[in-house]
Length: 77
Image: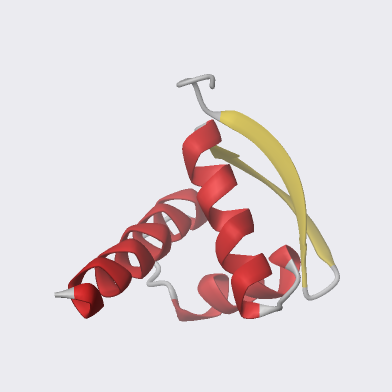
């Protein structure tokens, strides 16, 4: 996997945007979308709507992936 950010296009509520994430984050983000039965664009739009003005979308997605992982790890304890 490539450790450099890779740009992908997303559609958020009809608006096209590009997001740059490292491959492991793209993979985990797609897995979360699949596991929850939601399209990746819908999930990204939800994250976009809840992020603060001081947080970019790519950072918000990374934090979402991290929180998802942490919640599943801590749930196993």
